[in-house]
Amino acid sequence: MALLLAFSIGFFAGLRSLTAPAAVAWAVYLGWFKVDYPLAYIGRFASVAVFSVLAAVEVIADKLPETPNRTAPLGLSARMAMGGLTGACTAAGAGSAVILGAALGAVGGVAGCFLGYEARARLVRAFGARDIYIAVLEDILTIGGSLWVASRL
Image (cartoon, rainbow, N blue to C red):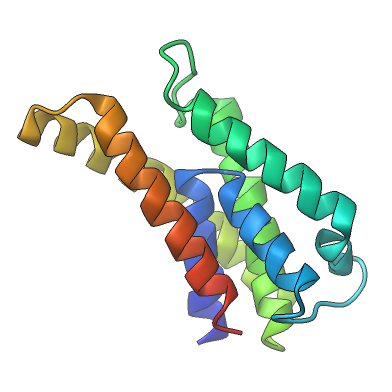
């Protein structure tokens, strides 16, 4: 179960690279689960504050027309890195192998990146909706899903 959660939190990092780490940071800070050094730094107040602010900025920036594509090398790298970090924390919190959790989180980040991109594009075309409406639905799914995963440990 822990490794499925590691993949899942990585998947949500693939949708919004900073929402999943913000959710995990809050979960550790609030004591929902515990991780050991060095991953414990994610639960420090400074980390919670930084990830929360950056996640909010990302949610806003995602709606801007000049925002680069998430599948571009920089965006994909960020999603892999944050998926790996959050997957490692999730696995550690459940007492599973941290390295395997990190790997599954990174793979989940790639999956979330490409599947999220494709789903969003298809929904916009299928419903003839403006992209911003589908993007807001994606935000809600990502925030809710990240918090759900973080609360399962």
